[in-house]
Amino acid sequence: MTTRATRSPRRRTVVALAVVLAVLVAFVVRLVDIQIVNASQHVQDAFSKGMQTTSTLEGTRGSIVDANGSPLATSMLRYNVTVDPMLAEKGMSLRDENGAVVKNDAREPVMVTWPEIAGEIAEVTGQDADEVRAIADDAIAKDPNNRYQVIKRLVSTAEFRKLADLEIPFIRFEPVASRSYPDGAVAGNILGFVGSDGKPLEGVEKLQDSCLEPTDGNIRYQRGANGVTIPGTAVEKPAVNGGTLKLTIDSDLQWYMQQLIAEETDRYQADWGGVLVMEVATGKIRALAETKTVDPNDPGASEPQDRGSRLLRFSFEPGSTFKPVTAATAIEQAGVTPGTTVNVPDRMVFDNGAVVNDSEKHSTENLTLNGGLVTSSNVAMSQFGAMVAPETRYDYLKKFGAGQASGLDWSGEPKTTLSPADTWDNQTKYATTFGQAFTVTAVQVASAYQTFANGGVRMPASLVESCTKADGEVIKPKLAAPERVVKEETAKEVSLMLENVFAQGTLADDVALPGYRMGGKTGTAQISDGKGGYKKNLYFTSLVGFAPAEDPQYVVLTVFDEPKKQRMSSANRSVFKKAMAQVLTHYRVMPSGSETPLLPVTG
Image (cartoon, rainbow, N blue to C red; front, side):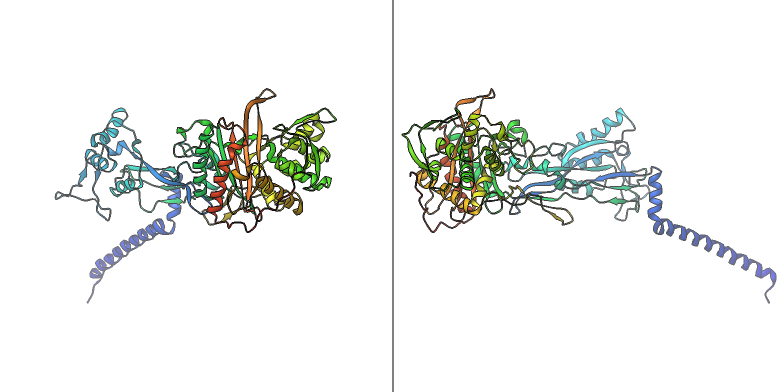
């Protein structure tokens, strides 16, 4: 029989066990609440009270690729290795794969000293062990509370991984973006470069920074007194990498053109030279080569004036390359035809007192409009231009790009000049008919010939194909709409006359490519002396043309600034022929199936 006395101890035992069980359940519930249910809230509370460490997660700057996807600029991460000297001096305890402290037979933690750790670091970084050890030792000697010193800057990813595998709690890694240009100076003047801080300084690196620039993230976590991260406390905001910028440039063609223009510039002893290749149907620039150029991997090796693009920042009087614009204007507004004639002496004094000379003396000729272009007669083109009111000619010059921006939105692009017609003096009224008294850029000259070659429709010039964001969104640049500048029939007539310039003029033998019909024009522009006059016997020379003329595919423009060995535009013949031959070969353009129809030069 059970008595009250025997029941009482059992009851007390049961009650005690129940109490213990309740406490354990309470602890478990609280632990679940802290570690699982409201873990993020508790971490945030800890962060709000300053119990946190925040590390920046750097995004990677976007790549720049050419029209075929070949990389022109890429980014890689390197790392600065830093140490907390105060913790380093205390050494560290060894831990097993589960994070538990390894103990010796006496059940004491197995400690690794800072000199031993410094030796392991030095084996990876290639430094001397004493050098690494001294970094923390010297810092603590100066300030016992020092928490930051750099062990080595810009270690490779492979070195970073080896150091991370050492699991040293007081070693940290600061990611540093490093820019690389695998093709060196190829398209360097277009690409630009970044500074040592990663900030873009020139070229599309700067102009398209909104596409390429990454957005940094961060990771916040709690660390114990020994520097070890407390599990479960990390809160991460991921970084967003920059987008991929695709250019219209063909890097293989660009490489060839840079080699070519460097050789030819040296050959003719010019201050600088350039080659521009534009696709007729699209206005896309496939090559923009110039010398001198810059290697974006080492911009400091180039002179400051050579680190940008002269082709995009230099303006000049186009000279004879804009005579076809006068011809088109006269055809549409004065009713002339390629066979219309004017009487042409080598020097002419007009009724208003203006004087126009041809470049060479000749007897008086009865030249057709075609003949005026073939012989590049200033006197002939002045007479054809004078058949149209100055205000109308001004409008046509504007439509062909004079006095306008190129549309590339390039930093430092010059404001080309074209004064309103009502401000033209007696001489300017005629000078504008043969490409003087206003300025253009190389892109605008190429665009004018793209317009003629494209049946009178000007396509906006472009260097950027697209930007593909990190999330896959593809953004196309906002370009001007295609614009009809002249009638299709006018463009065809002018194009045929430009063919005759190549077929019947002085260029016939020097630039002919067997099997291909080509059209184009030379230009020899006087250069301002900065004092209201022109430099003597120094010129800016150019040659621009398209091929195959019966179905134009590409425009090629070559320029020289102040060639000394051959001072006139004949200096451009060799480089133009080689450049156009390479373009037609590179893009496998079929030869023409016919000969150029010859038009009369004289009446």
